[in-house]
Image (tube, rainbow, N blue to C red):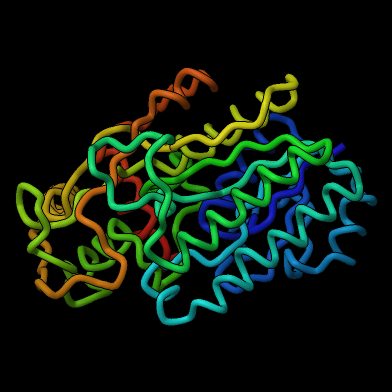
Length: 326
């Protein structure tokens, strides 16, 4: 019996694979390397290059390796890009996920963990935002993820399928053991780009929007360390293997930081002030996104270990510093 991790060569995926192997799981990875990095994948994982929507390949992998659970991380994730390329996002996120869910149902894979997003929420009327808040996404990215949540919900009613959908807030940081980290050069993550600026890889950091209704005018986000995020996936997996019911959960700490606060923290880690440039808002940007994390802590007994912005920034900075020598 093994676990299938789709998108397992990506940023979150490589962390997830290491965590699963550390737990003693047999891990099979499916990734087309559109953004993933093969060399960062743990050697003990069984890797296959291909698309998550390829049903023939999925049937082969699930049958050959006797897959007992799927952790579905594959997908396109850049919110502004989804506004420019909506059909690509619906194809890669929604249609491919539909194909994967169908094969899981067909072959009796009863446990499914889905990488969703806080982008499913409408701009919140109150903060932090709970799972009961209105879900009316403003971007194709958020809509493509919400459609997959709906498909899982409907499939679970009709078939022997149980799932946990984790709505990520802003994921950042790198493996504390230095095994992997965010390695896509043009990644849009704020902390990643701030570290690139700190190390001279970019000339300055663009601050998108300075007129939000927040204390300093810049967007406020809930930053969660990638290691704590994959711990949440492991807890979700344990929940499903114990026979637990399907769940939809926020994955964040419940505390927000503005863009300027992030700049201050990365500057402190780097030991010098980051150059920044104020510019306009991007399509789909909202003022604030902070999780109400009450439910995930209660339902999965999730206890974050790296709930500190400086710790997150320091791990991301150290990984970025090491990238050129890898």
